[in-house]
Length: 497
Image (cartoon, rainbow, N blue to C red; front, side):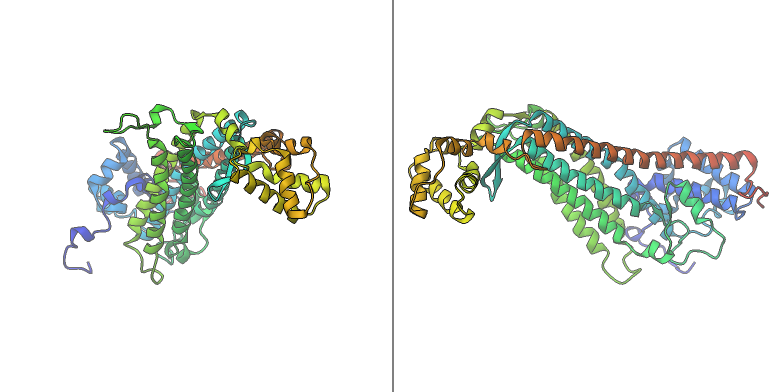
């Protein structure tokens, strides 16, 4: 031993209780490594059988409980084996391996398991948003910029906007999955081993696409954790924006939507209160995810190979945020599925505050040949006159537009009352937006079919990724069974020994 004193307890990195979600991954890696060593002849058949039988025996009483009792952190498998079958056999498990690849494999597998829960939850949320759009394709409402009425749109158009945002989150996470699902196993601490390890075999048994092609990069580069935290912060921010919209719209002043009571709380002093607690809870995940991002990036500062101890905290932050965001995505889907939408109030507000007058300017260009700049100025004066005289937009007469035109160009606008009325109709404003991606009901339904097809394709990709992991888990157990049954024949058919 290099050291002559016991390390202070609070400095001990190899504490099993710090490993949390990653214990099943560590256990799987222990088995896969033992299988590979046995198949390659680096463990004799009897040793391979004894190690794998003992690891299987650990499962009978629960892997986490057995490993926590054994201690040793990520090396709890070895500690358990030494106690169970002796150091002569149990001490052989770590051959050709390091704490480096042991924990890196576990990190990647644990994040992968979390992604396999988060991606279906995002798909379910997207499906709810598309259902909302189908239901509310004709629900006209105001659209906002700078917090002010901008142009009329539809609740369906709003819902599909978020479906698109979450679709991009899905796409980013799927791309990340491809970079994540490469195996560090066999890279040891940075140079691998002089033993003839089969890195591809271990990668296959653990459900990875391939080994990472550079042993130092596999262990000492940690941009992947930073990318994970950044993606989680992005999903959290999208969730918070959706919740913020609904939060605002659920106020008495807006009263566009109402949450079912089960998502709400009340006050200990104000009996009239109906607080949208579920939305506040969903919003909170953005704050937590951003804090995790800062923590993870900060933990990776320093020269290559220096940040080690800090990473045990950043990995917990990533795993915690994965679970939290998956839960909040599920909550958001439930909220949206049962949301009460006041379509009448939305429609009344859509044209109440001059949001439709972009089309009055367009009508001046289309019907009178006026240039856009003068048309814009005329409509600006038209709105100002209406506001000054206390007129609501639906009550504004064509004569008011003519008065504004006279101030700007010295003559009447040239629009007929019918043309003016069409331009001032908020529902007509929406119905005319039939361009690709627009809010017209037919356009929303048309694009929804495309969005639904993309969602179905994403679900297929997600299912394939999960099936790959399930197949690898089954292959690992089959490999263990084969060794336990036949004495550890090597992969080329010769007897290991």
